[in-house]
Image (tube, one colour):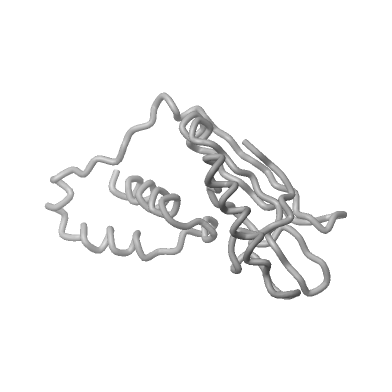
Length: 153
């Protein structure tokens, strides 16, 4: 786990206001994350961790390696409310109690017998992931699958 004020963003959606973004710095930062085999698992809360006047950026983040993610599968990050600093505090919540009880998603044919099955899947998949709105890619897929599993159980 690496928690730091990296003073850099990974893409233009992580900023509002100020000078145009430094695309070379963003590319270098993304290359570093990739070459170190680190992952940004998303977050809950405000999308920006730093503010100065009308400029907002996500400069602070917590990155994880594969071993951490497999050991602490329930880890999630929260961007807390700023108080005295111009940076938001970050909180990493870890709950590894379910590691030994983890069960992969398994499709059960009996679900097809329920006339409402299609509607359950569709409404689950289209529903927002609040408070997980800021996740994307496989993390978003995982949250939706986890929620669907709970609805079908």
